[in-house]
Figure (cartoon, rainbow, N blue to C red):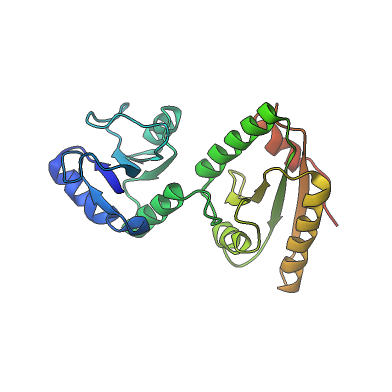
Length: 230
C-alpha cells in the first residue's frame, strides 16, 4: 500500500511526499509516481481555492487529508468530503500526526475533532440501521496538559473498539459503540477515578441509548446537557 500525494505542481507534490513519506510505515508517492496501481492507504491533497486538483478521483473507502491555505478553504474541503484538514502553515510534525490519525482512525488512539465527528456520524448511522444502543462519555476540566494530550491518555484506557477524541468545545469525548448507558457508566466512573487519582478535577457526563436517529450535533448537545456522573 502507498500514500498518494497531490500538490499544486510536480515540485509541490515532491515536497509534500517528503513530509508524508513513512507515515504508518508506507511510502508516499505523487499521482504520476511509481506504484500507480497500488492500493492507497491515504490520499493527501493540497486545496487550491475552492476545488480539488485533478489527477486523483476521491475513493470513498480511502481517507482524504486536505491541506488548505486558510480556514475558509478548510471549511470548503470538509464540505467537499475531506476526512480531515491541516493548514499549509502547520509544521511537518503536525501534518504527519494528522495523517497518522486519519490513516488509522480506529486504532484506539485519539482523534482530531473532524475525524471524531466522521466516526460519530458513521456509528450513529449504523446504530440507526441496526437498532443498536451506543454511549458517549465527556470529560471536561482544567489541567496542565492540553485536551489533546488527555485524549491520547484516555485512548490507552479504553477498548480498541472505542474512540477518544477532542470535540469543538474542547471536551474530550469517548464514543462506545454497541454499549448501553448502564455498561458505559462503569467506564465513566473508572475514567473519573483515574482523573481524580492523578490529582485532576473534572466533570464527567454520560449519555446514550437508542440515539441512532439523532444527528451528531444533537447527540453531542444531549451529552453536554446531561447531569454529571458521580
